Image (cartoon, rainbow, N blue to C red):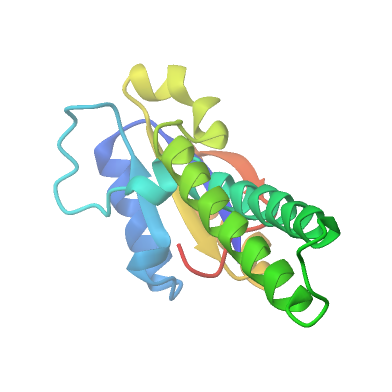
Length: 169
């Protein structure tokens, strides 16, 4: 999946874009709208916490760093004299899993409080009253969807695509 970003001037055009995406068989759960705080989106699918923050990237970084730190701590524990070679694998595995869990938890806490780095570049336009539409589409259909939107709504600015979207947002 790829995420396409559309910067839209008003609610009426946003509704037409969402309708066009739905006609193109993009599920509503893959369409997200970001607007200035206090803007009434009516029946448009509003972006949730996962789209508005850096939660997922922060959890991934925390998982990797915590797992690495836990594995390193496990290796240090094995080097200490009381460690037995019989339980060596268990100590290493347990410390790596514990480190990964703590790292993911800490990363999630940090990520949920940090605004999305990708959406941050659109903050000025959003505060000026424009709306940002995020659409997660299959890789093979990105150009088709962009062309379809541009054909029906030439005033919409396509702001590009994000290369990697997790499978579970």
